[in-house]
Image 1 (tube, rainbow, N blue to C red):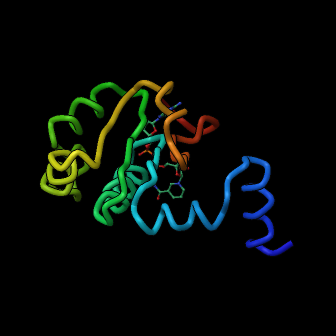
Image 2 (spheres, rainbow, N blue to C red):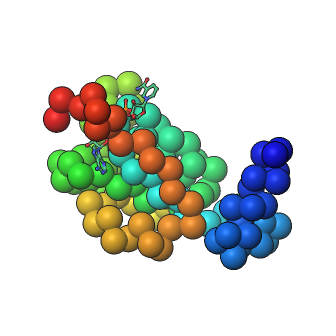
Amino acid sequence: MTETQMQRNVAANLAIDPAAFDARIKRHEISVGIIGLGYVGLPLAIAFASKGMKVTGFDTDPSKIEWLKAGKSYIQHIPSEKVSAPVTQGILNATIDMALLTEMDAIIGLRSDAAHSTS
Ligand SMILES: NC(=O)c1ccc[n+]([C@@H]2O[C@H](COP(=O)([O-])OP(=O)(O)OC[C@H]3O[C@@H](n4cnc5c(N)ncnc54)[C@H](O)[C@@H]3O)[C@@H](O)[C@H]2O)c1
């Protein structure tokens, strides 16, 4: 099965029209949820937001959510301006409320590996 066929099958199971979904992506109309706002998740969230995509980051660590909502970075190599700009524009949001995942059009999971997590 090719990747396109696989995408069509997944879309069919979810009752999503792939062409319409693709068009919504191109128009930046989809909401992207990123679970886990660490070394991989936060830069990815910023990257989506920099392309005008509405992003909501989900994390179980409330301190990270507070930092992001205040427009501040907690990762040394990511300047706070990269966070504050999309937060101020309203295209980057962060929450611990996992119930909001149901409002996302696409979800990317980047939480810590539970099997290897020390936290
Ligand atoms: N960092 C890398 O270079 C790298 C490379 C390859 C793969 N990965 C994988 O990518 C994933 C993320 O890596 P990372 O370096 O960003 O980890 P990280 O520890 O920096 O960040 C993970 C984040 O997930 C959050 N988290 C933990 N459990 C959660 C849950 N149940 N729901 C929501 N958030 C939760 C943590 O609070 C943390 O902010 C891991 O699975 C890791 O194995 C990382």
